[in-house]
Image (cartoon, rainbow, N blue to C red):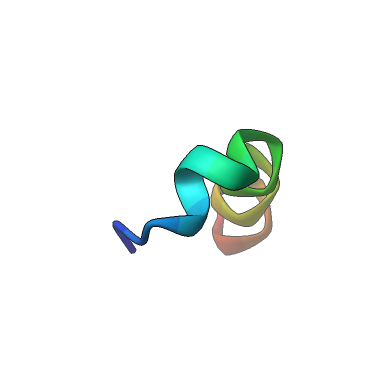
Length: 21
């Protein structure tokens, strides 16, 4: 989801997307 955490942890965003797939 689009959360403010994206700015603090952009890497986590990519990891989460990989886990979802």
